[in-house]
Image 1 (cartoon, rainbow, N blue to C red):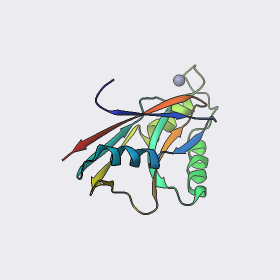
Image 2 (cartoon, rainbow, N blue to C red):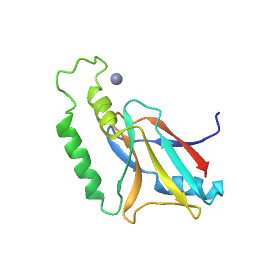
Image 3 (cartoon, protein in one colour):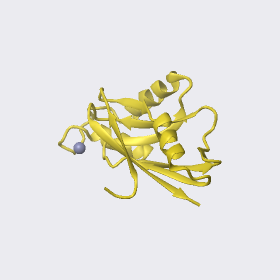
Image 4 (cartoon, rainbow, N blue to C red):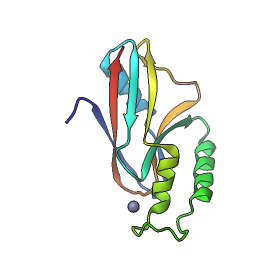
Amino acid sequence: MGNYNVLNVKTSFRTQFVDITSQIKQLVAGAGIPEGICHFYAPHTTAAITINENADPSVVQDIIKQLDKLAPWQDNYRHTEGNAAAHIKASILGASQVVFINDGRLVLGIWQGIFFCEFDGPRQRKVLVKIIAG
Ligand code: ZN
């Protein structure tokens, strides 16, 4: 295994946003570096990572609803595996995010949380987390 942490994320539904903020914060605290960056990355083609509000769960529900409108599950896609919508949603949100570390903590806005976004679950997934001092 490389010089990074691996978070295992088990999803239970086809579409599911899993709040991984506390696990990422724990890894940052464990790294014991005062200043730096934390890069987290989902090595999957039908999942993504996003940062958005985790206080009001209706925000995530609205994001999921609008992504479903942009990429309905059935839409005469060319990809024959049957999960083209999941690939499209994953690319819209992107596979990774970076957050600064200051005073040993993630610099997140008060309402911000980090979500692993499943679009073709349920599956066993991974998030790779690289913490760099500096
Ligand atoms: Zn596919």
